[in-house]
Image (cartoon, rainbow, N blue to C red; front, side):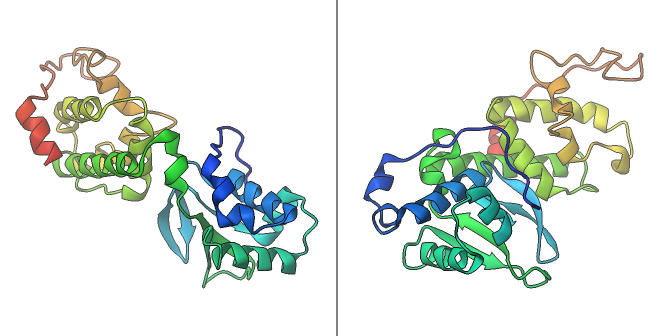
Length: 245
């Protein structure tokens, strides 16, 4: 099996599902496949390679082959029967959409996206709230690249990282962390400044040292030059509005 099973997280079941065609017009075996797909897809944006290019898979999407789905679902369906089920889910039921990778030597490899995933997942956020979070992440990324390191533009990795951190930290605090980092970043050549995906890293969240209430420019652990002196940049209302424009 090539698919990596998710090992954490919860799945919301929308009660209106009982009124949808995907429930009314499917048999118990097909429902098993439906629930398997809901459990398999990503719960948040992730980086992936598709058709030879790096892209961000939306929440509610995944890349898997038919053998993966058959193994996990344990529904007893043959490969041909599973293909027919997926086709039925796509049209006429409009539960998902699927793509085949043009460059893949695996004819059973699929990019599957559950339609309307955001409507009842995404930590309970509405479509508008989810889109706002993504818009803020894009603004913060553009601001970081413009002010700190136009040399690095790892947008594919950076945006999902920022979105993930925005679940625990406000947009304002994340913006302050960027501004507080500017004096240190300016000490280095562009190529030695933190890439935005690494500044907002997941395993090593460097930005946390620069959050308001934590940031101290005199700390040797942050600034290797013990003689470095500076006053933390203050995120005024005007500067925040400029960033948010």
